[in-house]
Image (cartoon, rainbow, N blue to C red; front, side):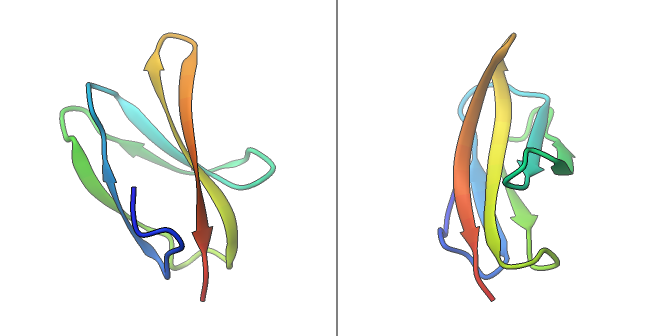
Length: 74
């Protein structure tokens, strides 16, 4: 995912096959759920969220999550 930090738009590239991609806040609350299906690249718009730290995550194996941190600035 890039750019990081971002002003809103984030480009995400996933290797492999996943169903759902999540944007969460620092407390773990899910703010956005994106159904990915067969797409390996997609964009997320975080510009409506407050400036701060967010987490991008997805399940790559049953019970195994991959998580990355992104900083949103305004």
